[in-house]
Amino acid sequence: MEPRNCLIDSDAPMLADTSVVINLDATGYFDRILEALPNRLLVSEIVENEMRLGEIEGAREVNGIWEIIAHGQAEVVTLTCEGLRRFRSLTSGRAVETLGDGEAATIASALELGAIALIDERKGLRISAEKFPSLVTATSLDAFAHPQVQSSLGMSSLSEAVFSALTRARMRVPQQYYQWVVDLIGADNARKCNSLPRSVRMRC
Image: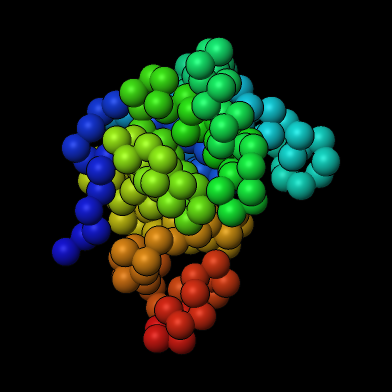
């Protein structure tokens, strides 16, 4: 049985954090994944700025998000005054209770727009659940495992896409997706993915 996937039950737009954009781009199938998903992709202006800064500092290659935006497959959104207030509340305070700018902007924008927040990091998911229990969150793996993405790409290309995200972007895999990922990419490839926990790789 496949893990529960909230994207299957909603066609609401999805707000992607920086790490999710990087994961999607690393697949080599960014545009085809977006074409298959019923959820329109949105990115916060703050996430857009993080992507540009990463390129300037040489942390990443030029990201495919610019072509995606230019072709109308994604849209950049700006926080309102209320959104900025919520953003500041998520970035100020003790480290254990605060988030990076991209995650905070993603959550704040998703709350404003009634969108799904696409976040991969445990801390962001935890704080979102604690402070905003009504906010629907999803991860990169939820997008990859969506039935329409599986059908559009086919399992061979999907396997290639997920393996690329794991090796090129070091995508985090939620626990509920460990077996799904191993079954998809195969045990030999799974052992090559340092972003998978060692315990998972040792079982392959």
